[in-house]
Amino acid sequence: MKFSDNKYNMIQDILEKTEAEIEKMNPVNILIAGKTGVGKSTLINSVFRENLADTGIGKPVTKHLRRISKKGIPITLYDTRGLELNPKVQKDIKNEIFDLVEQNKQTRDAVHAVYYCIQANSSRIEETEIDLIKEISSVLPVILVLTQSIGKPAEEFNAYLENLNLPVAAVQNIMAEPYEITEDYVIPAFGLKELIDKTLQLIPKEAHDAFMNAQHADIERKAKAARRWASRYVATTFGVGFAPIPFSDASVLIPMQVTLLAHITAIFGISMDKSTIVSLIAAVGGTGSATMIGKTIVANAFKFVPGAGTLIGGLISGTTASIVTSALGLSYIEVLSIIAAKEREGESIDLGLVERLMRSQFKKNIKLNRKELKTKDLEFEGDDTLNEAYTTYQEMEEDTQSPSRAQKASRALSKFVSRHNPFNKNK
Image (tube, rainbow, N blue to C red; front, side, top):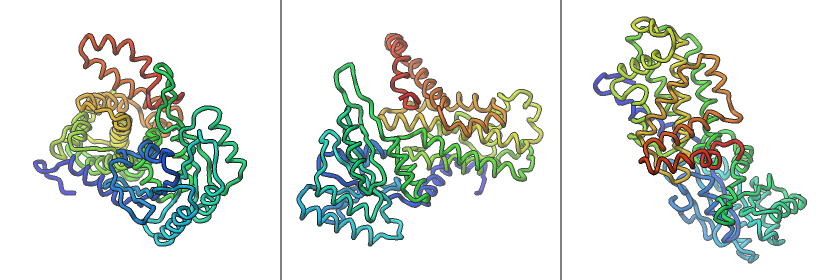
């Protein structure tokens, strides 16, 4: 990486490195099977980002199979079209699936798993369908996905299918979208995180990064994966022989931090553009030259670390550099989690609020000592940090509203956060 005080563009570097990280990922390939009308498109859009079933490019590969993909998302879905109980159609589809599996063996297009969708409230499965599931299960791991799983009949249907002892990897009830019973009572979506977990157990480890990038049903899992990677990266980069550097040479931290932020962005797989990253980086260090960014990030960090101001103009130790970089990475992960949650819900993001949130989280994280940062890196259960960040963003949104609207928002805020916080562990 060449540094030029006038020409170095950290934002462009992050975007390019993010794209390179995604290009390196081994794509994940999943077959979505099931009869027409069982909710395959709804399932796809609920599990995978950017409404893939609607906005992805659907290209016929055979008479009954459609290939769905989208540039920048490292996943390919194969959707069975017109799968009905007609034995002739089922035979054709079975042959097409077997051909697809055989042709793509040991290539980047190899199919890794199957979601076989059945509408749970139908409470029945035909013998011809059982035969087809058995046939497919002989060549690919299959998860039976019971869509629109409402009430006790859906649970009983799950138990019935389990008792059939079909050669499938799992049976999973889901409600892909909230289901409104009355104006005052809505059944929330459920089962998607469990489907994500079961899928990760089936697909090859080398396809995990691609699947994590593509899915948006479990944002906490994205955050945890990003934390694990960031923790290892910081420990490796700064923990082994990182020599103290003069404050004037703080720009040497920048390529390490760019790599960190780019990899985290690739894990999240959200629709990041220049303006969003500008807001995030501007919150802690500005967007000018490498030298100025490095100095500003470190100087801003020292403002919040008691007694650290004496180091300005002196040396930055490996420990100090690791704390600054860890705080930067953790704050970035927390803010990206909020952006991903808003994007999943189809809500717009206020870049001004994003910048304020990034600055707020960085101030909190930079005050933590090395041991506390390490503990936070490994905090995988009951993610209070993401809850707090989400609540902070909601409060910032409330503050920007007009007085009349703010009064209404204030009354509804606590109820909204408790019921709709995407990181609420009690949901």
